[in-house]
Image 1 (cartoon, rainbow, N blue to C red):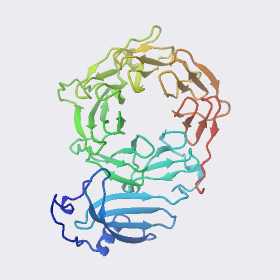
Image 2 (cartoon, helix red, strand yellow; image 1 turned 180 degrees about the vertical axis):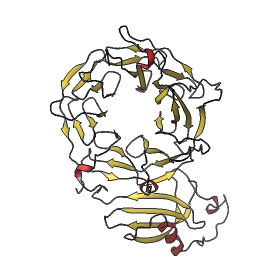
Image 3 (spheres, rainbow, N blue to C red; image 1 turned 30 degrees about the horizontal axis):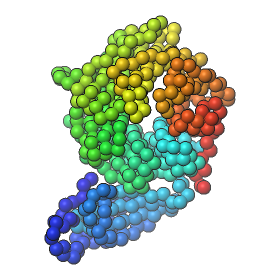
Image 4 (tube, helix red, strand yellow; image 1 turned 180 degrees about the horizontal axis):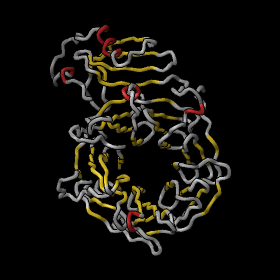
Length: 451
């Protein structure tokens, strides 16, 4: 949300003393309308020469309105003192980092994603909730944008966390085709809205978006809409200013001709870019072969890329599903493909040394149970995978795998995230585990919400 230009003096102009058009009472009223919680204690402070948007030289006169709740958490609303426009909303947590859940066992209930930046700093997602830790998962703070907390519907949040401070959230509006993007540069203390990804004329709301970035400025959002008969209406958006603005660069819609090669066919599992130019769409189709599309101009044009199926395996009739490749700062990358024939349900990792121009299969990884639950690579050599019963570890780029039984651990529907060759995290339905020896041994993280 861009502040009003009326609050910024022209260059070389002598600025008269600013007299707020919005009184303290009016500022309090504007903020309180966003939260009718009668238990909150509200206060307002007038601030001059405030920098509302990081990195901009504009200065503003604002009302800082704060709400203090009985639980100890706070909300801060910044309001333009001249126009009454809300410039930002932030959720501050008390020093205890107390979470909104009622008990420790419920904290990890329903976790849909975990991204640890390093062994201490990380983020987690639940429905309507964004959590952040700075001590390796022992304590967690609720840093959810205020508007999401006020939603009565279940909000499925997609996110990309670039580091311990920088976060991008994409939230479908639930009715039309729009997606609201929230940005934070201070660990979730203050969130601001970017220009909306607006497709309000679409009949169907977007499903959960996919977000990918190659640096702090350049990123993409893949918005899937309606899917039927192995095809999917979707759209690809790009930002080159860190998420402040988004531009539609590719779309596939039923009944419309697409000259850019962006596919309507296929149910997309995601999108990933190796750099500003080279990107890959992954997914599955009812047809034959491994489903992979490549772009070499930043996502504007696409073409189907052939990937050879390893001998002894079949990708006919939708038996293969590809997942977004992971790149490691250069030309090296790994593309994962799950096969689901009746006889073989292997995960096969394809490696590239030329930024995805060619993909070479490695040793198939066969699960002891029905499917391989999840996998993660920290570099081109070191990878980890689990079938819920065993942990599989490779140190040579998926050529060989060592199996470590997971004795007595609940790794069903697990999601893996490693931050180094030794330190990793595993998120299940109700638990989060940590390893410090490369996946051989795991310990249950017991969060202390009152520490």
